Length: 340
Image 1 (cartoon, rainbow, N blue to C red):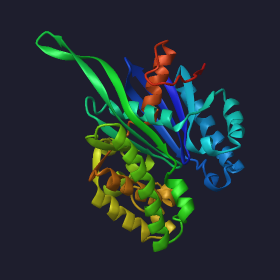
Image 2 (image 1 turned 60 degrees about the vertical axis):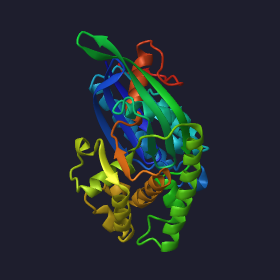
Image 3 (image 1 turned 120 degrees about the horizontal axis):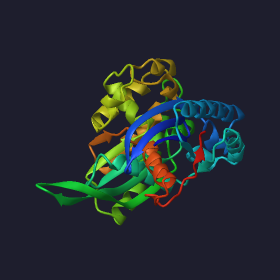
Image 4 (image 1 turned 135 degrees about the vertical axis):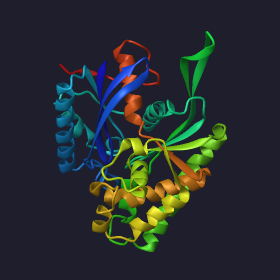
């Protein structure tokens, strides 16, 4: 069964064409376009008309592509920028005209879907997943427990139990932090960089503190999202971008700090030319790097594991279950629309 999953965030709009079997993604093709839907939303609480136009145009091409590839149905979610914007219904009408049922999901559901997607690579390990986006960062602690059953001389996996112990959406992401401290400018000032660090440190430390009060310490910190994957791509000079060289790769806090210094030392145009960094992501990359650096410091992890299995994976798994009449693996039920 081939399903289409569209997720519209503050910076990117993404499409996944996923083949799902027995609660697992067997194959997935992902497409990403930076549409900057959340441009100015932190200040105005409104989506710009041109941002809505960019987003609807991008998603229209996604729907056409999904239909041509033979996807049976499509699910569409929106996250931080749409949650914050007073005029989000304007975008919703545009998306509905494409035959979609756009759903603005709470941060906690966003975090749960992301954790569902990520955790399949870390069965039976308690992990802290950080989905750092443009407007918010979802922090989730939990375990995907695989149940083993005897079969002949060995054992086989017999079902899984998703156990989420903590989930919180922190209202801080790379675009929000960029706009508050003018970090897309050429050679940002030391005062602005220090201010961004202080805000990120405070908000991350408070959230991590709440997590520590509610559940046992995680074994690993796993990062998803454009900032996390770009850190690996920049460090390893990936051009073109290769997901197989990013997925489950590690980056140290020292390497993150080095990349922050590199970004801060360059003009915006020079950042656009850094190997491994999408030019359209250059304006928000410094802020995203600062945010993840403070997350690592305040959670006590010296290394970040980067995953490509993000919200789109969890969304596809959940949509497939509901499409087949099964129970949703998370406390949320998506609405799918046919693509025929």
